[in-house]
Length: 312
Image 1: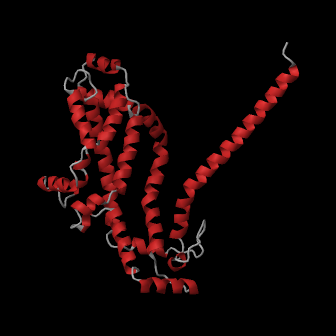
Image 2 (image 1 turned 120 degrees about the vertical axis):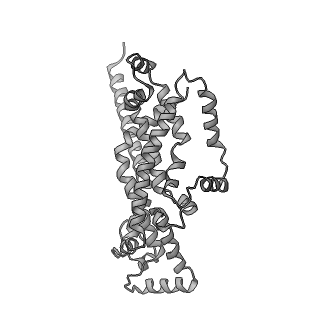
Image 3 (image 1 turned 90 degrees about the vertical axis):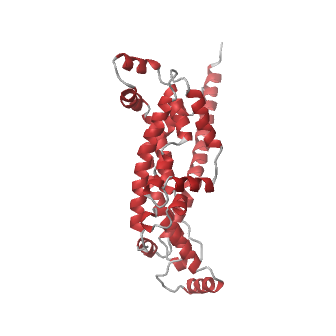
C-alpha cells in the first residue's frame, strides 16, 4: 500500500518545482519585455530631450532637459502635412484594394472546378522568387504612364503573392458545403465570395491588412523612384527621411561636430536641433500610428498566421 507520507512529499516537491518554474518563466518573460521595450522607450526619451544635451549621451529612461523643440522643428518642415495626407490616403486605399483583390484571386484559385488553377498559381508564386529588378520595374511604370502620378502607389500593389498564399490556404480549409449550398440557392460567384467567404476569412483578412498597412505606411523608396519630382506626392516617410538627411548634412563637418560638442559640454541652452534628437522624433512619429492600430488586429493576426500558414 502506498505510504501517505510519500504522496504528500511528492505533492510538495511538485508544488515547489511548479513555483520555481513559474518564477523562472516570469523572470525570463520580464527580461524579454524589457529588452523589447527599452530601445523604443529610450528613443522617446531622446526625442523629448534638448538636442545639444543629447550629444553628451547617457540618456536612459527620462530626458535630462525636457523640450518640444525637436517636434516643433519637425512639424514645421515643408510638405510634412501634405506628406501625412498622402501616406494616410495611400495606406487606406492600398490596404482596402490589395486585400480585396488578393482575397478574390485567392478564392478563384482555390476552387477545384477551376481547371487551370495550378498552372496559374505556379506562375504567381514564381513571381515572388524571381524579381526583374529596379530598372525593369521603373521602365514598366514609365510604360504604364504611372511616373509622377498618385496611381503608382496603388496599381503595383493590388495583389501581394505572400498574402495570396496565406488567404488561399485559409480558404481551402473551409468546408466546400458552404459554397455548394450557396450555388444551389442560385448565388453567383461574386455574391458567394462577398457574403459567404469574406465573413469566414476575417482573421486572415485582418492579418494581411496589417501586413499591407505597415508596408504602405513605412514605404518611401517608391516615392524616391517614381514621384520625387512632384513634391505634392511625397509620402510622409520620404519627407521625414529628406529632413533627417538635411539635418545630418548640416552637422556633417568636423568643425560643426566640435562646436556642437563644446556647446553641449558647457550646458549652453539652445533651441538648436541635432540629428540624434531629430532621429528620435522621426522614429516616434512614424511608429505611433502602427502602435495604435496593432492592438485591434492582434488577435486576428495570431489566428490568421496559425491557420493560414499551414499548407496541405
